Length: 343
Image (spheres, helix red, strand yellow):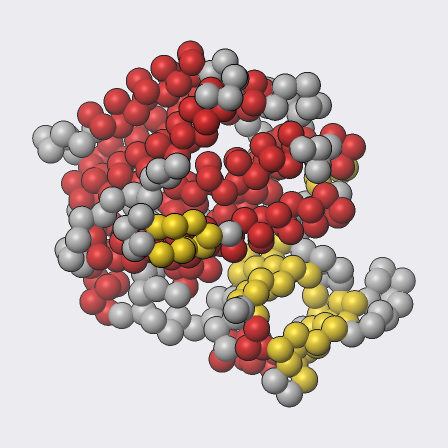
């Protein structure tokens, strides 16, 4: 089975026959022991430190369809090397574009995507409500916003409501994030308000880092389908280059990112002292970043029994299945139903 590799140390990456050779080099120029990674076993690379590489290496990675995701010093996603699309099909591209250009069709898909995300956020709230957390008032507010989203399906309403839909998404998120302080009381992590670039406290730094991982995981799965990652439905194309990855990440963040944060904080695997206040914001220290990434990778490989396919499916592959469903909808083979956690 192919694996994701996370490069935290700066160094040089090169090709050696059918293998990648990574040689760490520290800030003083001291060269460490090289590590060899067989190309057949690599699903993708995540680069958090500076990397010295050449075009021959990227040609080699491209031939083997290995994406590389880059992150800057402040833990922001800075871009990806995506090999040439090998599954793109003209028919799919035309159908996806037509859905984006049609106000009514786009609104329908955008609304369904947001309803999937809302359902999964509500699942988290109910999970902790059933475990003694007082979240009843937030669940009631949540239900009111969900009802507004459902009402937007009315056929006589225009697709220009996508912007209003994003406003409702903001209200949902604001309500949802208020629950974090009740789910993780006395942990040293406080939500206050959502802040990005840079995050203004520890919890915001965790949310931003997790959301970024969900975005890249979605981008990876889109790459293995015929969908074009730049044509989206809920988020505006152009605001980010691969905006369809933002759409898909929206559905899976409650299940993959938020539940992981609750686990890491409540089990004290990551604590308030695991952050640097660098410049104007908060950053995960390297040790905590590795803990998060290790748990994240494990989570993506964890499997559940899919009740439609009737077989074990990994969380990572659930994202791929969502891509297939979107593609079938655009090709008018089968109506899209967003992934909704059923457990």
